[in-house]
Image 1 (spheres, rainbow, N blue to C red):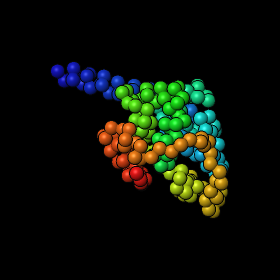
Image 2 (image 1 turned 90 degrees about the horizontal axis):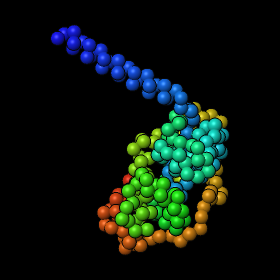
Image 3 (image 1 turned 60 degrees about the vertical axis):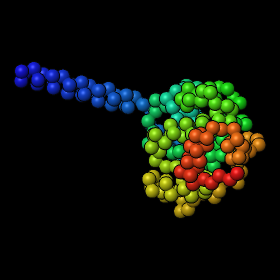
Image 4 (image 1 turned 90 degrees about the vertical axis):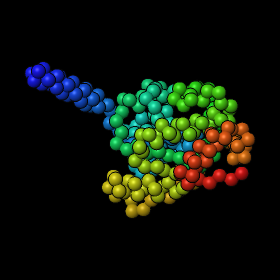
Length: 232
């Protein structure tokens, strides 16, 4: 009995050792990059790539560069559907994950008017966020909530509000974690907006009129979590 018990334990230990070895080999085959910036479509990922470039890092917008990438599509392990369609999150290992956000109502508005009209984008997100049975307004709200939940579950190292002095926030992050000594103070604010699209703006009252109550409650909680106020 003792021999059998020891043999079983040995087999289990070997299986664990093999699993660890496979994991290590998998990680060693992954390409190393410094930054992965994640957000929802229309949340400011284009701005974030420019911001890091201003601090001397080669970070592409939906293109992988030497220091990383800013792309809403790399939230999930699937090929990008735009720009470089060969890119897949599972093939890369990133030192820092940064989440960017702006006022959620602004993201919903831009998504509703300019992003969900692109069916390839909407269908891609719908593979990972359940939007079945929702109207067009609810889809925009649910997409923002669900996509950010996927990001939050990855425990980002830093959250940047692109509408709240992001230059300063990034500077002090780099100074603390990257021993950043190229500048003595944050970069000046960008004078023009990046990758913007002209569209109407939804009101919170419009959302309440067109969304089910439980979705509105979740949206309100999300806004409060990140310090954004909603006005009717």
